[in-house]
Amino acid sequence: MDAFVSEAPKGDTAAPPSSAALVFEIVTLFPEAFEGFAKASFIGRALNAQKLALHFHTPREFGVGVHKSIDDTPSGGGSGMVMRVDIMVKTIEAAEEARGRAHRVLLTPQGKPLHQSTLATLATRDHVMLICGRYEGFDERIRAHVDEEISLGDFVLTGGEVAAMAVIDGTIRLREGVLGNAHSTKEESHSDDNAGLLEYPQYTRPAEFRGETIPEILTGGNHEKIAKWRREQAILRTAARRPDLHARFVENERVLAEARIAEKRAKKELAAKTEPGGKKEP
Image (cartoon, rainbow, N blue to C red; front, top):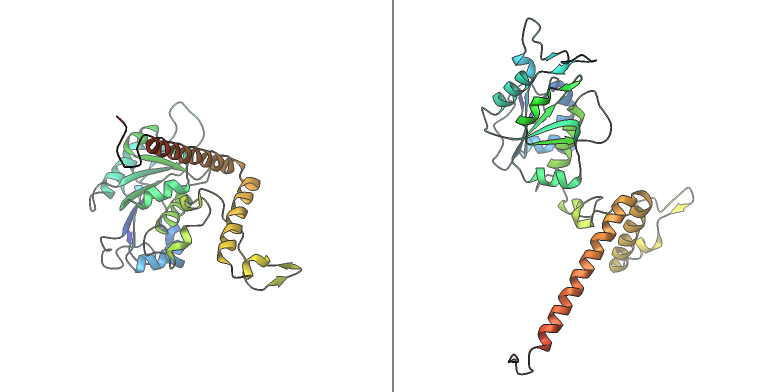
């Protein structure tokens, strides 16, 4: 089941996307969960502009028995049901028959935490598969058939569909031409261009609301001072709200400072070995 434009995922709804599109293969028992997501905001626009393609594949097609079961009881006993490895791998391989091998991502609470850098790496790819779990989880043997495991964080959801939407949303917005203003991703929280800091405070009209006003420096028109203020506020906000990110920032700044000092020292030593006429000492 495919969706190329902002329609419910019920089959091909338009011509195939351009070669510049980011193609997601989504393995899920509930493709209908993506209907509203595929229509809304810039996701819908990216689909319509053929910068994004979503293809849905349900393991139910390979289910066994009258009820097309895709899970079974845990070996050794225990609660819940486990998704069968044979059915999941059949679904994965069938999903790649039309468009070739994708970068396979298993969405699981046991995966590595999702960071902005993860999304930036995924945005450099053209073909990604997102595998959504349900019930008690996957048969352990599925891990030998994926390239990466990603978790939204230290909590558990009823399925991987919400995680898949988060990955698609966070990834496609980093692709060229998707957002109206490409610069908007440069100074936002967690971006490399913002040194991994949280974003500075933002304000807009009205100038005063219930006694709170916009900082005067933002209305003065001095862009150099505004940039300096924003940088300071980003550092202060990160230190207060995310000391872990602030500690990483401080360490990175220390390493950069040491590198600059070493570079200056090397240049000074090289200059000291060179005579004024440009000839090196014997």
